[in-house]
Length: 209
Image (cartoon, rainbow, N blue to C red; front, side, top):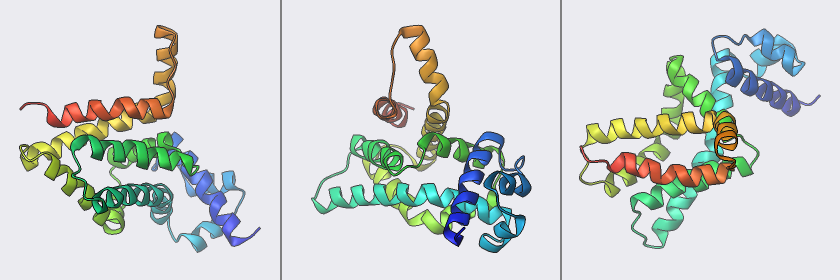
């Protein structure tokens, strides 16, 4: 087995187990057993459990931020004034749907992101800020420009409300879609769900105080 194969197997196993069980509840031995490698391989390739968690997020966040940044730069280079709808469509349609097209699972990513907040993974926040802070500031700055009448503290809270709605809607997508099918006889794809999520997020961001 090549080193690349070993790294991929460890990351694949860690991604699934962390999303299903949580970070604190998943031991390195469980990951290595699932991946079919020994514990020394994790220590060699990642160094620690914290660095393994960071590597799992990196596989999601790198294509996500690259897609989002490319879309924002494309629009800006054409002299477009990015309104709120443009920004949210870029966030949901381009970045999250693009992640799915590259073989990453937005639903699993949202489960992991929710766990990052509920299980107080401070090291992960520091890693994300250090690695992807420029991308966040670019998007957040564009969002502030599109909402000049919203004060910074209110915008902060509304962004987290939007994040919470996004995490719940996508991390629970299969269950929500099953209820939709049972109660309304309708079905929804990930793309359709993201299209519905964007205007709901816009309403949340622009609601009167």
